[in-house]
Length: 114
Image (cartoon, rainbow, N blue to C red; front, side):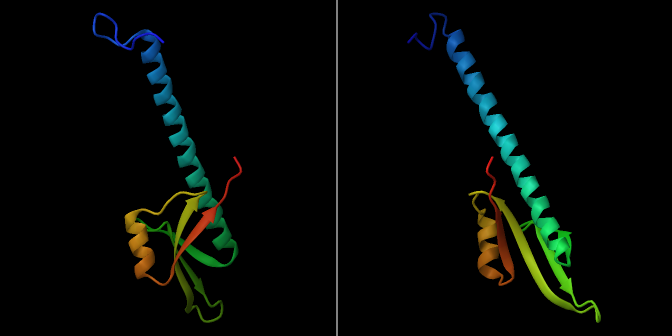
């Protein structure tokens, strides 16, 4: 394997190409994970809408706030905070605290085969 640094103190072309390819690969993986997360959020949103819930987007700590109302009286019968995760992604520290402190906090996981 050739030396990483040439006699002029620069990376050899082989190593600079290799590091650039690694950076591009990481960027592609990150973009794919972002797309999977957004798709998972849309799937869960549609699930709750078809079950008769009102779905509202939240800012921090969870993805959605869902409410089910009684169709005749209009009173709220069920309220939940929903966090959507794709595959084996982890909860952030804020999400973990929310899960511990709130009884109506639910984590929905969507498993993708691709």
